[in-house]
Length: 114
Image (cartoon, rainbow, N blue to C red; front, side, top):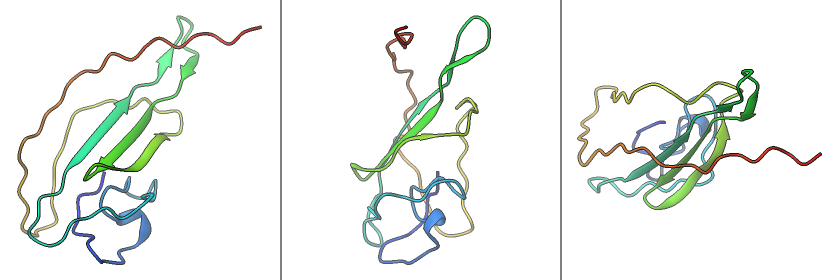
């Protein structure tokens, strides 16, 4: 998920703040002005498989940038949403604070009716 100053900035669409870099364009540019804190809420859902390994529910990512939904249930092409959290920058001044990670309980997927 892209962290970038996109306030009134026409950066290429899949590189805007809160885009899924080179994968998914934001629904809206929700960036605040220079010097203001940006907030991101990122919800990752891992794919669910049955006992035979068949995908029952694909993984997805939803992003709220400054309280506004900018990505909604974007699927990662059959890949599980997994791994750790990594932060990086491109040499511009950036600060991070109040980073939280917590496990959410997602109800099980009901099999389709026959």
